[in-house]
Image (cartoon, rainbow, N blue to C red; front, top):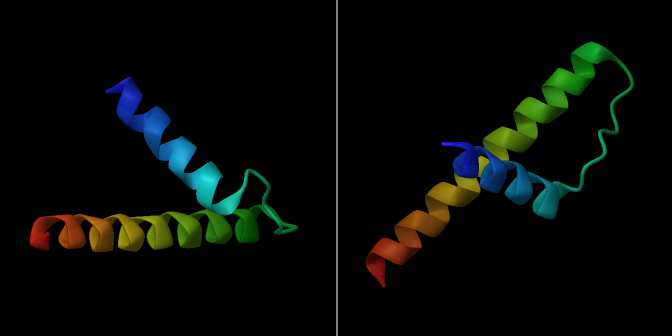
Length: 53
């Protein structure tokens, strides 16, 4: 299980960097949520492309 989490964090850092640009705790959480949501969409698209190839 640990390798899955490490791979996910690696993907997030590779795509978005490891710096949050928000200034408050609330906007930090919103930024992380947005980045994770985009990563999930990206992974879904890549998985559907692999399935059709």
